[in-house]
Length: 94
Image (cartoon, rainbow, N blue to C red):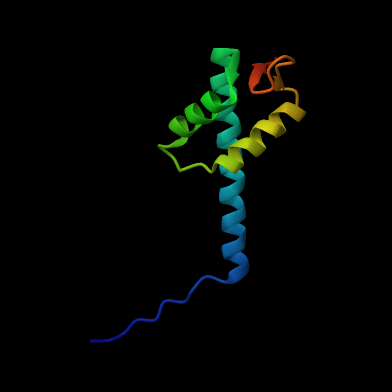
């Protein structure tokens, strides 16, 4: 029986693939959050995170920290805003 040596991909190529996957996941999380908020208009933080995890569970298992970062980014880009009375509620803008 002969052994076949398969060369491993270079490290820089592996890093590029990881960066591309992270970028695609960020876009997927953003799209999921916007879809959910577009239909609900006002939603609590915990409900938003849980629905986002449920939607994205078919593609990948999203990290809670990543979802929180994407929510904050959408707030800075004026897609969402925090409720003035209850900071755990988000409102959809647009």
